[in-house]
Length: 295
Length: 183
Image (cartoon, rainbow over all chains, first blue to last red):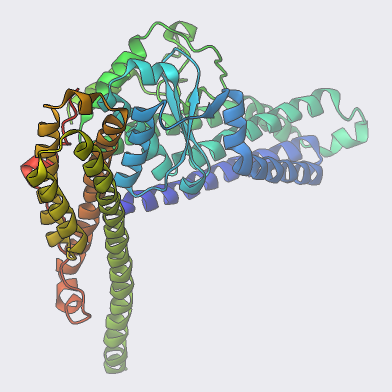
């Protein structure tokens, strides 16, 4: 079980490397296209370092504030609370902070930069509507995200994706409204302007698709390793069924936090049909249930 | 020249192998020990709940002397057991004794209605699952470690380095079920 964690840590480094390459190339191309190579690099790196540090240390607090979560009381939410305690024992994780959101729609998520600073959150709806074994299935899934360092991976990816979009945005503004000075424009080479525009259009899309593909892969992995802890695939399968079929919508749906939840809080009707699947943060629930039932 | 390489190269390779093997084993063994202390914590928590439970039940069911003695004895045996195997067996005996205690409690409606009793029952059932989960973690680590010292070529040196097989924390069929909590 420890091998898988180190494999994931290696993958994190690989993905970060890929993104840095993507950003560096974009920065270089934009720099050449605008003729302001140094400015671009300095600005880009400063912003990257600043946002990375901030979100690395404060992402959990920001997420908890965004979702209106409050600490769970052991006696009031006995089943949920002890499920987290017990499964932490089974996986050898330190006990995370346990939070609850007052919302009738059943859902749950985990966040935090490493197992020592992790938070597991469930809605009151989930605790009320699910059986103990189903709650355990959900909690095991969330703890797997913590154990596999998925939260750190996804947080870093989200920052990097956002960063690519910012770069692209800047490029357009700079190109279209920026230096009107003829001389300065002359320094930018023509081919790079064309490549720059193409980059600005496609890089954010490529980055987002990379993010979503990683996210979907992590969900399957968390399902599988969660079941490895509970030894009871049916618990998570029925929990997912109940969550998916529940007609209640979450009161506060923020696209920025939707990828964190065990089941996307954005319902099917909100999605664009043509690109169905490609832009989802989660694999289809039916597919996850099918995989769980065949374990 | 080639002989020199062989004379220096092969011992060097063996040395590097031993170095890595030794470190792997140290890490694996310390994980087993850490997991074991996890079980110990839960067993102790369980043992700590029992005097309280016995006192509560005594207040209502005064005539069940033998039952209390069994539970107290089983608890004492668990406290004095050392190896994983011994502890596992003592824990099973205690589970059996508790089961009969809870079965008898069924006959005393006032006891069943007591808030203190139902709280203790809930806590004990929870500790029971915690023991089960820490056993799962411990046994997974033991398996990991035992495989490491048993595969070739590690098996040739692991014993010489003083790394021997670790015991599993056993479970029998009745211990796999949590204490049933009926009201």
